Length: 257
Image (cartoon, rainbow, N blue to C red; front, side, top):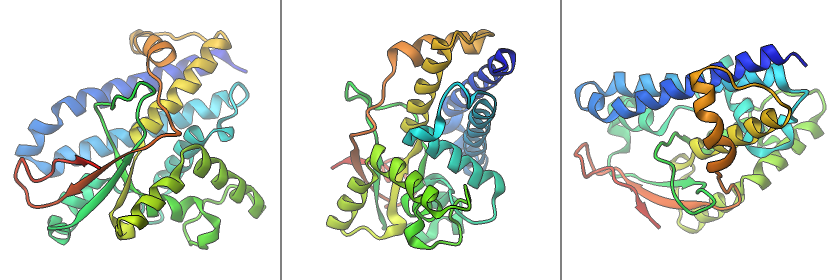
């Protein structure tokens, strides 16, 4: 274990998190001026956070078993998929609604949004929704998708990894709700932001327990909230319905269901 490398990776992840948060604060205003720039900015910065998380994984995998947990494993698999980009998976909900074919394909459509709440029942102020069927195409071996992650030559490894993610993040509950409410597969979305927060909390706590330093302003700032204050309940899910009625300010307000 090289503590210096891990400390540097923590600092870079915290820096990416801060830059994303600042961009999120500017998103609504910029969207009114230039939707394409606003959406692409925030989506690329989310990918930057995933890259920084993966860098931390690379240098600290001996300290923390990332693939033993659904949230940390999922982030690594999604990062790898986006990094290699040999498919059209994992475009954000905002991109699909507003930029894909100019958004015209989805007018009148209703979407099911699933999100893990905090332990105390509150919601995180930021979100990043991806289609659940994109995720399934990447991690569920039973679908025989051409986009399945190639983690190992042993098929049982992929099955085991899917079961860890599926069970710990309670993804079956989303599929059950979507089936009951008859949502098409391409209109079912999972919020990655609570999963990202949950994963960072786990890893930061493990790094702190291993006496790894949190150096630099951003790392020091995020240390306390992500080790003692924030906690996401990955066993529970909140659902919302998003009805894409048009481009007005009141046309894209999710309703809890």
